[in-house]
Image 1 (cartoon, rainbow, N blue to C red):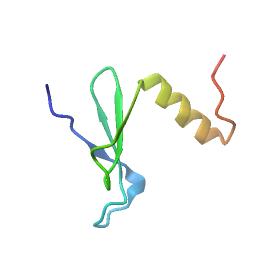
Image 2: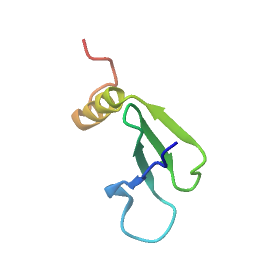
Image 3: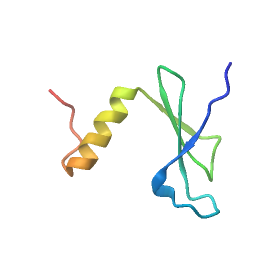
Image 4: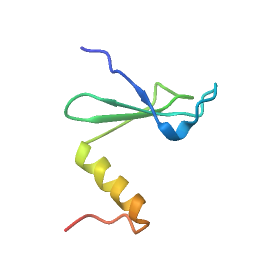
Length: 66
C-alpha cells in the first residue's frame, strides 16, 4: 500500500505546533486528520467534501444538493 502524502491546511498557520488539519488523497477518497491525533482519520468521497466546502463558503445550511 502506498503511503499517503499529507498536506497541511493553509489556515493552520505557519507556526510550530500541532494545530493543524491535514488532508491526504487515496485517489478515490479524501482522508482528513488532526495533527494532534494522526491515528484518527476521517475518510470521505471528494464530492462529499466539495459539497461541505461549498456550503461553508456560502454560509448556508449543510443540506444535500438536489
